[in-house]
View 1 (cartoon, rainbow, N blue to C red):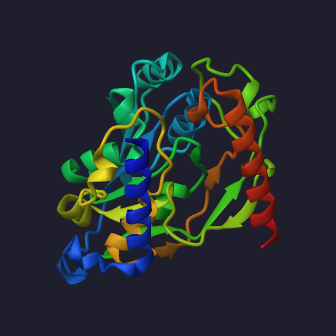
View 2 (view 1 turned 120 degrees about the vertical axis):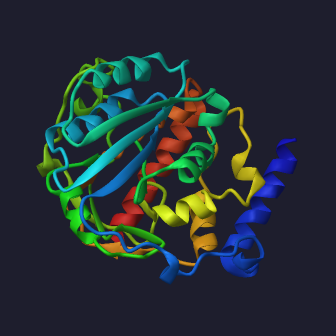
Length: 295
């Protein structure tokens, strides 16, 4: 079974490299058919959280500390009942009122949570928002982020957008105060922006996919690829964003949006108690971060 899944992943990744025309799988609506909405827009932010409650606290706190004034936000978080720390964090924030923000917690069996495209597809097909921001729970929407986005989205018909720049931390170890202090205690927190440095975003990658609502409702999120809609026993490597760009026939259009911050962390919650794999993956992440900084 594992061999078959690996083969299917390889086939999809090869197709998404451009070998296969995306039109064979999906006929896209023409951009001229998409609504060019103006005024007070509706944005749905979609995040997934598994064993990252301490990072999710920063994301949800940013919506309370810097609530949007120019658009209405629905904050959707997919999680699992087995992740009790995240459940406690969500219970805490559900009791916090944020002007212009609606909390929407969606519980999934962990096997569905581990395949991120399942939740994203579910929201894409059912959303009533003008735009979707598909993100990760280590992203922080800091000062001026969402209100600038509201201005940038006025009258646009693009299928896929993304922030041109982000601010990132160094690769933080578990002992770093940002990650270690009161690790899973439900609370309001804030970042220190001076600890972040500029990094260009080259395309609409996993955490930075801003999708037109009409496209989302019409096409879903990788709904045409059965592999990406099947539950898995462990967190699946996220190749679906590349597939989604292929289906959309675009790398995305960049927007100048301030206040987009990402907390980079060496240890991934997805590896659980597998110490050997965690150490190996952590080393790879450190090496990739150093390489990216040099480019």
